[in-house]
Length: 207
Image 1 (cartoon, rainbow, N blue to C red):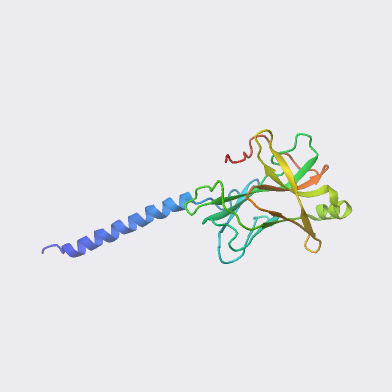
Image 2 (cartoon, one colour; image 1 turned 90 degrees about the vertical axis):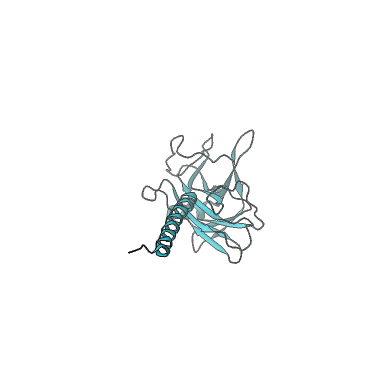
């Protein structure tokens, strides 16, 4: 009985297509940023949201303490917004005046997982921090001790910069506005019993 070469060729073609699909899928999967990295220890976790040019987007940290609101058409680049929760007091001040119980980083990655170092942002992004019961009570007593800050890299010295904010008493949130992706924090003046991470736990990404 002669072999049916047409069927053999078709079978080989299907086999090659399946293998190629598996390899391509694995490659793209490895190139995209990880989601929910180390959520069990809470030291660092990530959530992602696809950039949407037609609808407003909301991305919330896994512990629900940070929310970022991105208007439609706010980001011209295609890809994924990555919100990374960091250890409290990442990048402390030399004088120790401020404690930062909530610290997070915002980045943009292209569809293949490559960091976009200078994303084009054309609209204001809203950032909100959820206060604990203790933090909310402290805020009501002395609002001047509470700020939202972002981390600015300078040639001479890096520093935390205060930004204006509004409060939502009913939801215990402090919300501010940013016009670029950066390291952000809820900052509280004075001692609040927050542990300081050891040196090298997190390094700010080189631009």
